[in-house]
Length: 153
Image (cartoon, rainbow, N blue to C red; front, top):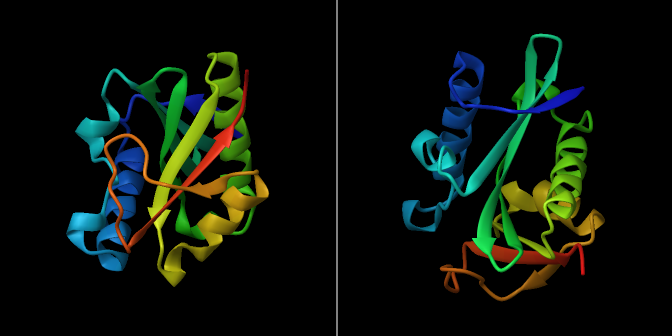
């Protein structure tokens, strides 16, 4: 698996981001969907990675700089045909390591509270993320859970 910074211009990644947004809207009320669209993911404060095996897209994930050495995981998504193959674990490990190299001290995330997000929550728990209060501009929402992890000093 090759994980690389992606400029979000390829047809495959555009399709996966679109699939991600559609899936979020199917599982959560629109006001509780915090996934970024393509333009949002191209922001200067965001680094976006994609995972590939030869020419096949496996998944993606992003890191948003919240300032004060705090980053937010965004747009973690595994391509449907590659679920349960370790793609998300590899991407998450890569992003955590990159965040450490960049000097981040904390990573946080928002994900859904519904059953459809249970696998994602379990993944984050395995990586040492703990449940927390809303961070940044988030507010309490019964459709969201918030998690955080200290990664550096």
